[in-house]
Every structure is written in C-alpha cells, then in structure tokens.
Image (cartoon, rainbow, N blue to C red; front, side):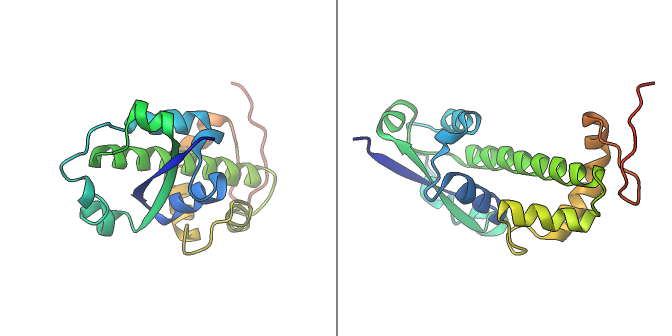
Length: 172
C-alpha cells in the first residue's frame, strides 16, 4: 500500500479550483505527467530557511490568497524532496496560470469561431470547467482575451470576425 504525503502551497483562487476539479483534493498530479514532472523538478530535499513562512509572508497574503494540497507518494518524497522555496512556488504558479489561460483562450476563441458570442463563450467556459465568478471572473477572462487573443488567433489559425461569425483562413 502506497502512503501519500501532502505538500501545501499557496496559489491564486482559479489555480486552486483547477487543481481540485482536475486532480481531486488533495491534488494527485499523476493524471497529467507534464504537470507532475515539473512539480517534482521544483521539489527540494532540504528545508529552506523561510519554508514555514512562505505561505503567510508576501506570497501568502498579497499575491496568493488560497492554499492547495498536492499529494506525493513515499518514493517521490524520498527521491525528490518535500519542500519548495519561494521561487519554486512562484514558478509552479506561473506554469499553471499559463496553462489555464492558454486553455481558456483556446476554448473561447474556438467557440467564437463557431459563431458564439464572446461573453456567452466565457460563461460556457466557466460552467464547463467549474469556475465560479469568484474563482475566475469573466472580467479577468475578457481582459486576458483582449490582451492576448490576437496573438493566439494568429498562432493557431483561428479567424473570428467582430460579430463572432467564422471566416476562412486562407493561405497567402
């Protein structure tokens, strides 16, 4: 029987919601080998000087408002470690935020390319992936789409007119 240990790390509300919805509580990252591999890469065997205060200093209250527990088995605990320093916590959160935002853009822009209005696509995303307005607000999603949507459309070849009707992406 495998024994599990949990590591608690601070995170943003939508990162916690994503991890809990996708991997359970505590989060078992073994369902996604890329996320798991990156997480294990960031673990350390030694106790860091400020490890006890990571959750409640600048990362705990000012940037990250939630905490999530991530399960690791005994072998991973012995092989990779049990502690994360501040930079590792920050890097893991950035990795997951980028992953979630890319998935959000792809979902919403694909819905738009099939003729759905932008706000309707945002609400559909929130409903499909279990995000409440408190976890990942539609204003934040809309702001990210406006900021990064054009680059994403060019990269993945998704053309959307202003009114939401699909257009043909012709090779020139």
